[in-house]
Image 1 (cartoon, rainbow, N blue to C red):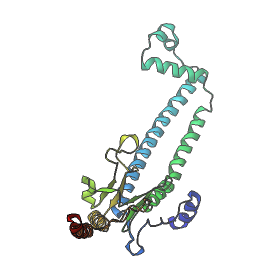
Image 2 (cartoon, helix red, strand yellow):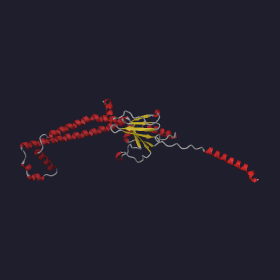
Image 3 (tube, rainbow, N blue to C red):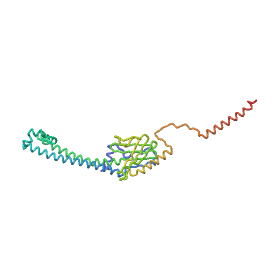
Image 4 (cartoon, one colour):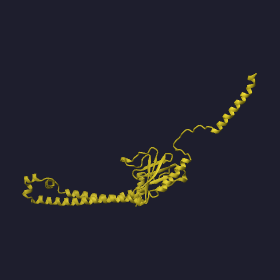
Length: 292
């Protein structure tokens, strides 16, 4: 099913199937994906959310069923006029407090104002709620699966690219020229499932936080979410970062003017010595004339 709807959904959302590799040598491209257990964590969260929604829906159905029974009972009492004088007495009406007063108001509304089709309308809303819950299950399940598949992590010898998201697509590229920190983060559940997050940070990202003050992906920070080879990715980035800096490669986006070429210190010293020797010879050749 997912294989059938995937091309149509990607075309509708204008999502390319695979991200382009960032700047770097073609042979250095390494592609990583989120681990399978990361998908199971997302699936577990989805299942818990659906279970909570189902429990809430079941509770509302029971509540409406009791409400229907009370509604029918009050309507029946009103039509058969079997209402005791005590309930209609003014002294009792003023004596009700809290829930009793609210119940009396509800009974009065049902007897004199509520139309007979009120509970039929409530039953239709019940049916729509149940149908909506059932119909959303395959779509939200597919969204969880497709969102998992949209976790792309690409590393070259000069930069890295991270792309996540299905409806809200996020793609960030970080050059090794600005990269400052690479670390592995792993919570208790991630440790149990054998997955972790690799966090990379560039210059100027020390205090960045994500939306609503929570740490997350920012302009100066990227996260390889839920990978099952976090240490391999970290070591790969660190090794390529060392090679990048050892080679003296700069940021390809920087267009600076080349510095003027200066002579080595040894050549300058030799030239100064030759100049001094010539000055001494010139002085020696002029000294006899000065004496005469």
